Length: 377
Image 1 (tube, rainbow, N blue to C red):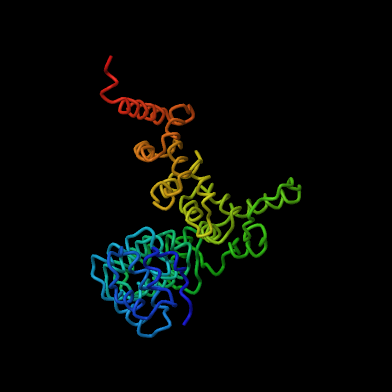
Image 2 (cartoon, rainbow, N blue to C red):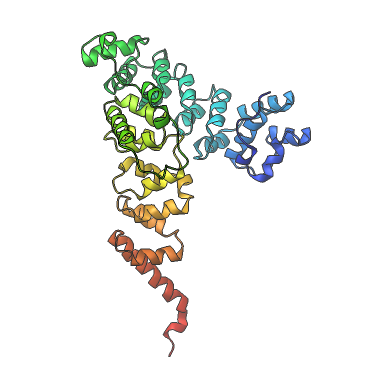
């Protein structure tokens, strides 16, 4: 049996013994049967997933059966959870193959891998096929999704045509998909096989592997040479000329340099592809939280993400950023430490309302500290 691709550390400590291959079989079987008390739904399905890699065939089979038999209220909470891992969602897509509600939640979870979308696209119901079609970023990011959606007998022809037209308008043409070829003729009025060769993300990354594929841990301290500056300018110009679909692929696969260029793109789908890249770092997210020119959708993605808000510095940066909606910034301010609220009260570079509310919060706290004795003489 292959090892579980997720480390045991993704589970709370009390659950790790139930997935540890060195633990006694009865302890692992207890986990496989879902009999461990007081387990959060997300942790339960993650534990079952981990046990599906157990060396004991009985434990593996039991874990799968337990997952398939989970009641709606359990898997409903788990599949909505923001912290769900992609491999677990992929595994559950097979376990819940006949459950429409479960598959809908899997398709709506941002952590679901594109490969899972592509696997579900040709077989889901008409209603779920519409959900696949509406996820425009995924359609452009992963060709196989639109390719498989076009094979779905349940999908409405109008929905497939709309998806193909959207992809073609954004630079994606697949010559092996008849519906995409027809869409290209519809949109551009020409046969796509005769179109000129376009810049592709894969081609550019192959040509500039070191510049676009490798993330340096630390940028070089020396000054950039004129040749290096010219090469960087050439790469930037070629990226700008790419179609939206190729930019999205580069945003997903490329390094920090590629993401920095694409985060400034006028198309919000390109910006979001860069912000949601699996390779993006907390440091880059911190930079975006501080940025006053970042795309509003990217900023919303950050302040709506619980995992990002667990990083205190990111939360502080969002409060100071004038592009963050005031109600959101004020709500986040209430969770800051007193020393940072004092700093906000003195900082003239933050929005005036934030500064005023910080001062009001401090005055209220000071009055509360004095208590009834504050009025005695």
